[in-house]
Image (cartoon, rainbow over all chains, first blue to last red; front, side):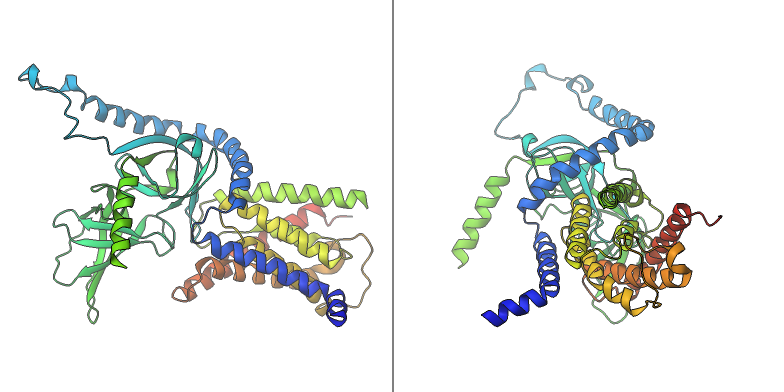
Length: 278
Length: 170
């Protein structure tokens, strides 16, 4: 014991090095599991405030583009209003609760920090737990997917964008519902990779890929992108293709958080199934 | 003494803000992400105690991590180069005595010494950072290219900063 203390005092610098390096590695590999650490909780508020000020300034530079997107969205909403429909029989218009239950709610959020040039990219939004944001919620822009929430604090949240090594989106070909996985292998932020396309399927340039709805995060039918080019593998069992993302990740300014009103019900169903399996 | 401490704290804040607000937002290429903020570790005075060196590097890394949601990534790389810094300094020392209160600089130590010093530390930092970030071997050469190109840009920024802060004319 005495010797150990002597050793520690003499070599304390190595000891300190291992402790600090250990803390760093522990934080890094735990954070990869998307655990909401206490540290994130404290720091999100601090970093969020600084990044918020910075984004308030840079917001002005993208106003023209934001206006255009808003106008497009407005037009879309106007065309869905009841006034836009021809009323054949006024009595046939009623709200049927049993047929249409609200499944998704959308909250608009501002992007206050974003990157596309890292291997693992994250986006910070100015909405948090106060506004009802929780982990694993999907983020979309119009009808295009952006990513999913990985950590939340009171007023801010971090979103893992599609441009991340841990992001894996379940999608399908629009033309024949063939399921595929979409990943991003770094490099160009405009294109991603489509994995596991069966040999028998005919791929064409320009094929649209949409979300499959198999994951809990995104509903079916959101736009992921279009096939850019493809390779027919000779020896493997699957073909590969690159997909051009529908979302322009480099110019995100306003996005929507998708709140799944039936999330709890789905989770419960899944858990009851799991417990019966054991 | 107090002036040196205040100067370093100011540099800490300035470099973090520069990295977070400007350098992290430059969308030049996915292969070029300069991490200029480690200039802080390079510039700490020679006689900084080693425990302070390690702790301030850890603080620097973890602060940057808070802004990019990569907890531990930058901290690990910073602590590593802070640990290696004294070894590098003794390994490449030219035998001349370092003046108390002075930081390593291009002007005082010469181009050759400062180049070795910064190249070694920047490469170690970027190598650790990029390989930890990807943490798989499938993209080995792609990552290597990112390490080399990003290091080149970080070094370029460091040398520009050196020339700006110490004008060569007498």
